[in-house]
View 1 (tube, each protein chain N blue to C red):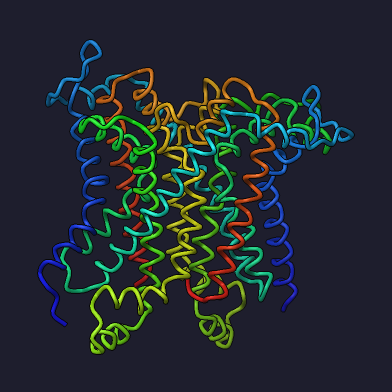
View 2: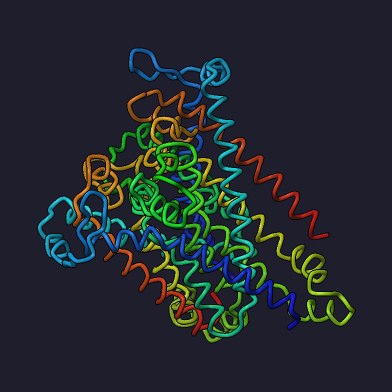
Length: 263
Length: 281
């Protein structure tokens, strides 16, 4: 390595460190607030406490929102995985019609600004007479997550050899048996990775959800509502927990993708 | 292998139902609404261009729109100027360092968006960490109000929130460059700077374009960031649209304003796609 190259490395490395610091600063601030007291906007480092974590269990609003968020996430992830598989198998077969068009529709909610996905869904639900509820929120999440699950599952499906499927048919298996015993076992790790990724995105989704919720708030919406009227420190505790869990989830996903190869 | 007709039909139906019903139909409904109007708080199914004319008649809309275009462009520029070098640095690492650094730079994508806004608000405030740091470094004499509840606060916050969207695509397209090409360039006598300019940079353009697009589009439509850190002056176009669906209750006008956003976003995607294709030749 030449001197110029080493210099470049140092400069870029310093920049990377600064950028990463800026990206994590918000999380660090919240974590600090969750264990130290803030007096007149100053952090009092002598006041370490975990009390706010304990109080969390008594905040009914937050717990309800957390429950709503988890319900939506489980439903939306399950649906977007199943639909992602169905659509990937459809689009992977060259004999099927309208594959490009279908792909475009699946990707659109991911490409367009979320505000457009959100407001077109709320207009549509109004026109067909469906009231806003957690169901409409879930549908909004699926519309947005489907692009991701489809993409990840399709990437995996493409690398699987077609001769595997042919061999299975030659041996007398039908379509379902081929899927169940030949294809799915090879896609399982992609399904898990896509599911985890979709789950973290669903738990955090705010811009589409904003147009589709009614009385039952999801966690981000509840937090937003609370922030407008002032904030209690147990929210910092909750958020620190959430950040911790997301970090672990991300770690898990990356491990899976790395170990099994592809992704 | 012969497939029964029923199976083909069932599979098509299962594949198309959701996207047609919950992506295409809502978009059609949304486009239709932009030609309707509101009278005495009642929606009237009409065919009028009044909502679009309102955009040009009321000088606020074009002004906010241009302001938001500028803002999104700046956020995108910051994303690129900081994101590209970071992605490049990570790509140059070998072994374990590379994927650990990549993971660390991608995880913020999954950290709560609302919480980031909340944290940024306290970082940028009068008694926030930014002011403390600047005063401690001697760059400021006294804490400044200049970082919160204005357009600059929106810019800084969006840059922090959307930067990871730029890093990942750039890294992915750098990773696709065969190492042999760079070695060949060096063997042919190119200095590292020349190899970068003529081999690495052009080949990483697709990811760079995708990353920039993501940042730009998200910044264009965001309405929570300006609301949380922008105060009364940090108004953006996304917030204008959203307000028509809240208190304003003028869904047709909001739809028309959003259609204008949609057209610009599609135009930007189209131009970026054309640039990407040309560069590949």
